[in-house]
Length: 250
Image (cartoon, rainbow, N blue to C red; front, side, top):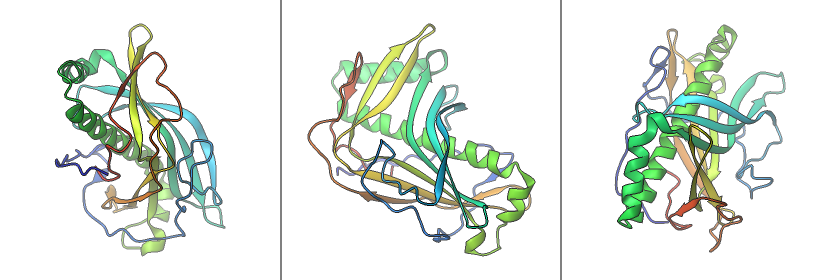
């Protein structure tokens, strides 16, 4: 995999409840194992999880890209202990739809890179935007989780590794970007055309510090290998990048 040479610092979302303090990433329960994809649920072993939401759509702002707004589309798995306590969220099948009237400058920027055939920079900027959208969705979902006082009591900071809450985000590692517009006013869909069985898992620990949520340092794990071709074409859209242009960690 070609390593990215830039760094992108994501802004904190939900500042009313999320603090940017760092906590160590420690395995709590047995992690969802990385396995070959099945039914487009990238790498995830769902033995202790239930798919709670399928193709759910959430309107969110993307940190660092104001005023750009998106619809985040995803599947959400809830993972529970034997006693029925939710200790982990797993997110799969993620894609975004950019709302044109707020994301025009970003879309114009991408168009200008395409016109001059600077596809390396274009692929990189799409990857960074996608990573920011992932983090923004994670922050939103975890913020909603900790809005429940019971969940705050179950996952306090300082309560030990077994009481931390986990979010895991599974996505393809080898893919070509597919973008296309539809609707009126138009939305711009940004999705991945997958090549091979390579996957990326992002894992974050969270806890309630008494006044807000403390977010741990993300951990990244990759698995699998790339193929030369994507599984499906980009119907009616435009493709960007090559299958092996991406890294698991942004």
